[in-house]
Length: 120
Image (cartoon, rainbow, N blue to C red):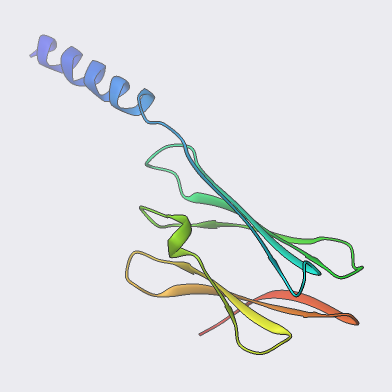
């Protein structure tokens, strides 16, 4: 029994320490490079949530950023959606495992810059 417990603990430790961190970096420019959206996401281990930094540089405004955690098992760059709904507003969506999305709205005009989480 002791042998089994030692082997189990050793296997568990090896399993947790062998997990590689994952990361994603997206950098997209719009409106003739007057608006830049940058997304950096890091997942330290398979047990951790994704830590996401969402940044936007809009015209001559200072860069704005939002940092949050997203609980999703797998995240790929192509899963993150950036949809412009009109000339000045875009929705940035991050998926959940159940197919739903966490959404953020970016308003980007020469005189207005706003980025916030929105509910569905």
